[in-house]
Image (tube, rainbow, N blue to C red; front, side, top):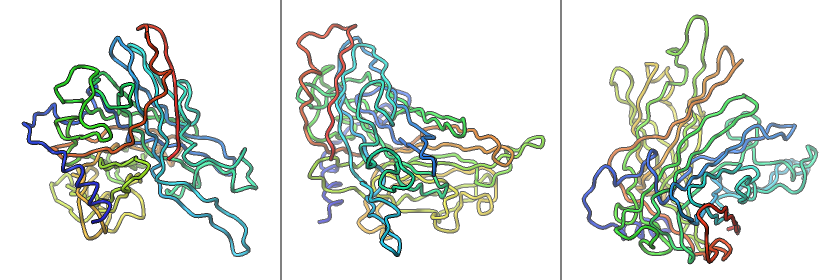
Length: 412
C-alpha cells in the first residue's frame, strides 16, 4: 500500500453518515475553530536582494475569553539540491522543501492579532524564512546568502511560499471547539505599489460538545461534517482569459493574468509523516458561449501556485483567450486520482486566486484577490503530532483584558 493510500484510508475511516446542510461546509465568510491560509508568499528582487513582497496574516478571537492556537507554517515547494557550474562553483544553494515549523500562540478575549511572514512580528511567531534560511547576511557574491529560491514565473525574483494551518487547542495541545476564530491575509507588493487580500477558510467544529471542550481524536482533524465542517467536493472559478481585451477602455489597455493557488486538504504534518499527497487538478472550462473545454489539467503535490499564463500548463491552455474564444470563462476544478499523476488520490481542494492587471504596457499594476467558492461535500483530514504547548500560554488566572502572549517553535 502506498503512503498516499494509507493517508486517504485514514481520512476515509473517519467518515460517519450525517445529514448534510449548507452550514456543514467550510466557509470563507464564517468564523471557525480551524483556519486555513492557503497562500503565503515572500518575494525578493535580484540582484539587490531587497524584499519586494510580504504577507501579513491576521487572526481575531471573537469571544471574551482566552484561547490558545496551534499554528503550522508549511513550505509549499519541494526540496532542491545545490547547483554548480561546470567549474564546480556554486550558483544556487540547496533548499529545504516540504518542511514545516509549528508555533503556539495565545489570543486574549476579543484580541485582533497580526504578524508579518518575513519577521513574525507584531504577534511574535517564527518568521516564515525559518523554512528555508539563508547562510548569513545577504551578499550578492555568495549564493549561500541569497534569500528564497528562483521564482518559477521567470521574473528573476526569488520567492518563499506555502500555507498556514491554525486551530484552537487546550493545555494538552488537543483540538477544541472554539467557533470564534477569524483570519485573513494581506499580500503587499512594495515594488508594484499594489496589494490584495483574502479571507482564511474557516472550518467550524460541528461535534456536539461544549464550547472549549476537546473534539474528535487528538492527532487528527477530521473534516467530515461530524468533527469539523466538510470540505468542498469541487471548486468553482470565474476568470478573465489571459489576453482578454474585455477590460480595455478609452485608450487604456490592460494585460490580464491570474495567480491561482490550490491546496489539497489531505495533509500530514507529523514528524513521521506518511508523505504528501498527490492529486490531479482537472479543469472543466466553459466560455461565454457555453462551449465546454475539458483538456486542461496538471499534477499537484501538496500545494500548487502558478499563473494561468504559465508555459508549463499542458497545451492547449484553455485559460488563454486564443483557445477559449471569449474574454471570460468559468472553471470547475476537481482533485482526482489519475494514472496521469502516479500515486495520486481523490482529495478535496481549497483555493484562492488573484487577478493581476497591468495597465498600459505595465506602467501601473493592480491586484484583486478572492477565495474560490465550492460545491458538494468531500471529506478531508489533517494529521499532526500532539504537542503540549508551553505552560506560559496557560496561566492559572487569565484576566479577559490582559494580553497574554507566548510562542514556541520547532522545525520539522
